[in-house]
Amino acid sequence: MSSNDPQLHVIFLPYMAPGHMMPMVDMARLFAARGVKVTIITTTMNALLFQNAVDRDINSGRQIALEILRLPTAEFGLPEGCENISSTTTPEMTVKLFQAIAMLQQPMEQLLHERRPNCIVADIFFPWTTDVAAELGIPRLVFNGGGFFYLCVKECIELYAPHNSVASETETFAVPGIPHQIELTRSQLPDIVKAKNEFSALFDRIKDAERRSHGVLMNSFYELEPSYVDQYKQFVGIKAWDVGPVSLSNRDTTEKADRGNRASITEHKCLSWLDSKEPNSVLYVCFGSLTRFSTAQHLEIATALEASGCPFIWVVGKVLKSTKGREEDEWWLPEGFEARMMEGKKGLIIRGWAPQVLILDHQAIGGFLTHCGWNSILEGVSAGVPLITWPLFAEQFFNEKLITQVLKIGVGVGNKFWSAWATEDVELVKREDIEKAVSMVMDDGDDAKEMRKRAKQLGEMAKMAVEEGGSSYANITTLIEDIRLCERK
Ligand code: UDP
Picture 1 (cartoon, helix red, strand yellow):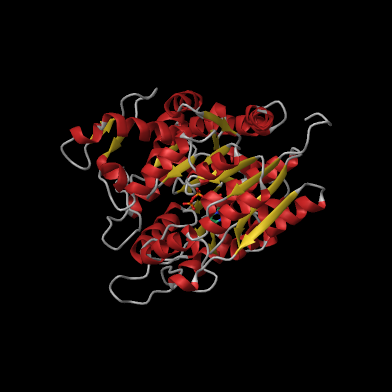
Picture 2: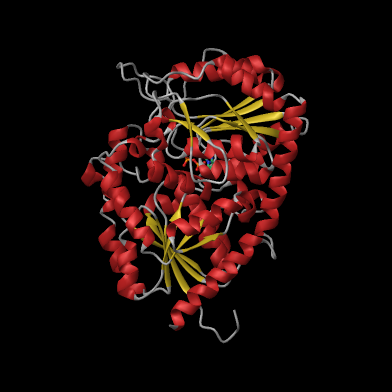
């Protein structure tokens, strides 16, 4: 930016789920670090989740502000404070929250008209922002929470419908049209890919709004999935900028420790436990912010971790409320398990929110058992550790294939079934399969060594991408210049 250029103002509209909101807040902060004036529009409870980070930025002289709207939760029968998808406990609550968030369109539109920014960066779940941007004569950039590989695979499945040529749900098929040989099964595809459902109209609208946008903003980096970055640009026919991994912008311990929420463990307890372990010896186990397992699945995980003998940190999520009327302990674990694990520091249990990036970046971490949410994948890759993949829902099975079949930096536990909620009817992933995957990654066999080496190399590339001179850093520069050019037209 030359000193004569007027300061740009960009407004960010993150969706209210950690996997969307956290990377978008990181992106907003990256723009502010490059001299752009940034405003983030969100709701009261969500603002609290990143207020500290924003305050730190303001104190260091960046121009970043929050605009806070009231979310009509009571009107939809939601408990007070339930403003984020991660705080819903049943599918019905999630639908109500979607509806409450949809009510923000009018006040958000009003704010955008009043503030008249130079650009709107909005989540894919706010498709109406494309039209508001057109009214204001400014670019809208779509933030898509996933990666390029997933988008290309989805596009090719929609185009060629290879899943319609297999005889059963579990017979594998290859995905035509993409640069690598990828195998999937019908049972691993999201419901919406297989048949129209109640969300199809919304997703059609999202796609239409995306293709009419100025460009797509992605949390990825070129070196991770180069042929898919190029292919996706051809598919969408609009510009795309990959500016990640954005979590790497959280550099010091405080930033990493309070990213996204207040952690359920102190920084000190977490780090001193890790400090007591050998390098690359600890398995980190976390299934993101939305997964709800049954108590039976928790039993399988606990038994496998204990039997593996590998030191671990397990971020235990809330279990799914029983459909058979039993009231379960929110964070159910088998009797005596935690006490046994604490003895001799075999395992550390975190109930609730973990400082994930802080943990992954510790030298003691040697592997990450993940549900394959895109942010978790990128954070694992950035930390340079091999992954154990256990995809469950959304686009996670596609992300798994990038890890196990393209990059070859991970091994799957073998989950075969896509399911939005881990209900009691879902086939369990068995303890033997979990234990086998753990030993394949954590025991130092030749294959594991190779995987570890590749993961480390990718981690280095990720870090280089966000440094001055790196691909993602350069993309932010050209993106800001692009917004400026739109302004001059
Ligand atoms: N996360 C965290 N602590 C937790 C659980 C999740 O910091 O205890 C963060 C994680 O680092 C990631 C995000 O929440 O940035 C989850 O996004 P992801 O795409 O991996 O999965 P989702 O929660 O959307 O399924």
